[in-house]
Structure formats: structure tokens, C-alpha cells
Length: 204
Image (cartoon, rainbow, N blue to C red; front, side, top):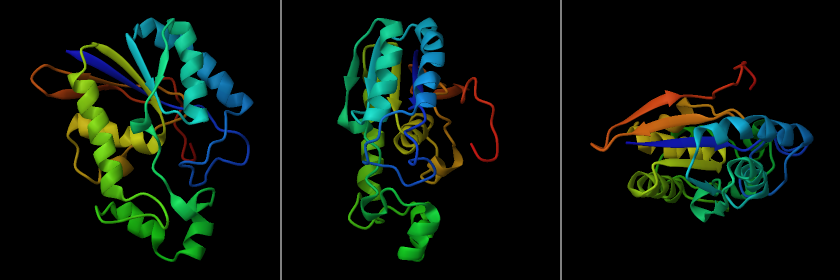
């Protein structure tokens, strides 16, 4: 049996929320830093024995704050990069729909052959998420923390839980709120904690 903890990065710098934010690379806002600091002690109490993080600043900075509390290194791993939104990067949903009619509907259908204009193909992205899920399932460590982005972590979560392909849009991961999956030796997995410590609102 092992535990896999998933933590989305803290709030990004002003002007980057509620937008397509994939490979754009802002750091954390002051609130994002506070969010990471608030959960660092909690994560340390979970005693992870390995920390992997996306190399993008908002995730890596969150991971480094947590890693200091855990007295562990935060290992950068490109498999945890967020999806590349291509020409949609930095746009709001409304702006993206105006420039590319139907694009958000096509994305939310999660068809394997869908690609963002100038960006990443969903099948390639999903394969990356599966590769990370397989990696942590097979890793010798029994208590692993992943710090990354909403999209890639939802994909990893779905593969750990064997949820259908449309599953990622059924989960909303809050900023800096741990989600935990217990993976059993028989290859089954159970969601034991979701967005812990986060007060869910309609706009979160």
C-alpha cells in the first residue's frame, strides 16, 4: 500500500487567474505564498518520502516551500508540466471562444485527436498523465507528493482511480489543497481525501 498526495500550486501572480494558464510561467502571488506556507506543516505531518514537482515557477515555488518543511528536495519532472494551450495561453474563456468559436466545447469533449491551436494534443497530454500515474504506482517509495497544475493532476488522479476519459473535468482542484489517493498492492486505489482544508465555493 502507498499514499500519493496531489497538491495544485498556490494562487499565481495577479492577472493570471481564470485564464488558460499552461506553459505561461508566472510565480506565486503573495496569497499564493501564504497558501503554500499554510499547508507546508500539514504536508510535513504526512511524512512524504519523495516530492516531485512541475518545473514551472508557480508549482516549483509551492513545492520548495513545502519541501523545506519536509526537509526533502523537490525534484523537477517535466511529466508534471501543465498542458500547452498554445495560442490560447493567457486568454479568458470568453476571449478564447471569440477568437476560436467552438474551441472550449471541443476541449471539454476531451477527444483524443483534439489539439489546442499551436499547442498540445490531448492524447499526448493524457499519455503523460498516465506515465506519471504508472511511475508513482511502481515507485519504491510508499508516500509520494506531487506538486503541479490542475489539469495534469486531474489526469493523474483519473488514471490512479481508473476513471473514464471524461473524468478530468469532473474534478476541481483548489489552490494548495491536498488530495490523497491510497494505492493498494492489488492495483486498486481509493480517494481518501479531496481538497483538504479548502472551503469550496461556486467560483473557487
